[in-house]
Amino acid sequence: MGISTRFISAEKSIGAFPAHDVKSCAGVLVVISFFCIAACTRQPLYSDPVLKGSVVSVHISGLRDSVPQFYSYHALGHTVSFFIIKIDGRVLSFLDACMKCHPKKRGFRFDSGSVICKACDERFPVSEIEKGFGSCYPIKLEGQVHGEEYHIPAPVLEDIAKKYFS
Image 1 (tube, rainbow, N blue to C red):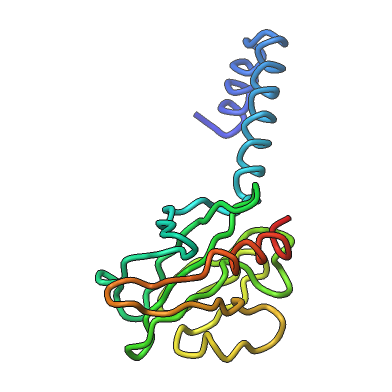
Image 2: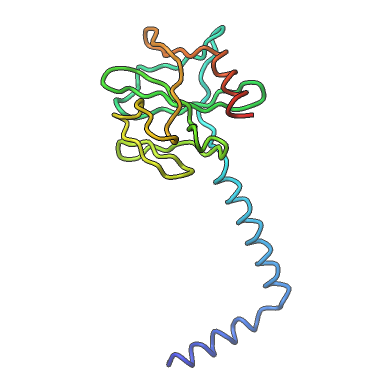
């Protein structure tokens, strides 16, 4: 079958569909595209940390070196996402937001030893994450190790909710 024969055969197949079926398919594709775009522009939700009194607590016994664990804390009607990471034996915490791109609420992803901004694709090796070069870098978050847990004061996350996530 030559190319022109295949084209004519395909044209006949397309012509066999009633116009309302084509419009219905187009409408479904538009709706699916809208939901995909909306889902990709929102910051993802992660596991909830535990609230113990006035501190947000996360178990760190299973924390692997240089691999962030992401969490979402709900404060004042907003979701504050953050990650905890162990670097050279120290445990640190950062917002899942950066100074420049936080209005987009996309956060970071982890790949091959780096955290990458989902909004501008800026890459930061985890070994240099706390240096904070430029304007797109994870925002350092106050926290402390207490035994097998990492504690972040809940009022700190509530202030952040007002400043960055409202």
